[in-house]
Image 1 (cartoon, rainbow, N blue to C red):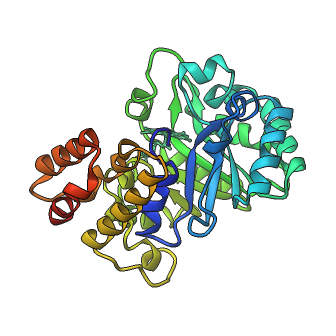
Image 2 (cartoon, rainbow, N blue to C red):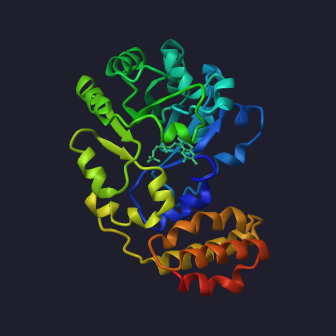
Image 3 (cartoon, rainbow, N blue to C red):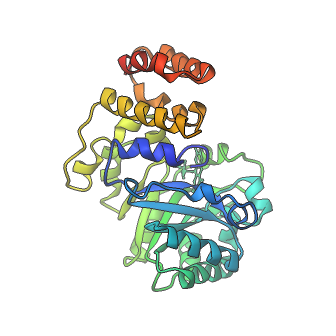
Length: 309
Ligand SMILES: Cc1cc2nc3c(=O)[nH]c(=O)nc-3n(C[C@H](O)[C@H](O)[C@H](O)COP(=O)(O)O)c2cc1C
């Protein structure tokens, strides 16, 4: 998630769950090839696995070049974004508008697969504009699949390409989980991961009766502790089992180290707003984070912050 799931946020999540698959923000091929934004591809090889990078683009050779780079960096998966509805992304002719061009998507996927042995996956919507019917999604997938494409993540809403902001595009089109369930029935050999409006691990369990995986976006970002039982509940492993205070303490120590390395507190502390979600002093906690960022002095407030979660 852009502006959210950066390297710092992923560090925070690895204090909470060892097993959940983490995804980077979308990185465009243009940013990598022409913008020299290679640092956007950094990840912490020691702790982040399993981790996927998400690429945005529509030029097969550029996507291939970027996939090669990402593959050599050691990502576990390279995800191709075919679901972003933003106007800026449409101007670059990528994201959700690519669902109208299955031939191009197929070429992109094949070029990416040829460039790296790292698995290529896609993330799409159920359709675009008025096409929110199951036939559109099935037809799209039938035109892009190949034996090496094993996983498709589907945000269970259409993308409205004109007239809605990206935010509205995550709220207004109704969720149609049934279309994703039907896709799994149509393509039983594909790993189908469902996304959109899924609040927590319990809700995920219901979906897992129909599909193979569940992707959660906003709810864990807004309340990271909701995934603290995911390792035991979904992956049958032992949870990390740390409480909020311990997680925040560890993350604050990380922020202090990062600050010494030149990463501003505004970039690292923004991810902890949700750590006191559901507690009484949310407003005071929020204010103290903002004040800490402004004064650029975490040493002075760290104990108070920890006491508030
Ligand atoms: C701030 C923000 C940034 C997002 N950035 C991306 C992105 O870079 N790539 C992507 O595939 N989806 C992105 N999304 C969409 C989410 O991944 C997800 O598909 C959507 O929010 C629905 O799932 P949810 O209800 O679990 O959040 C973003 C969502 C938000 C709120």
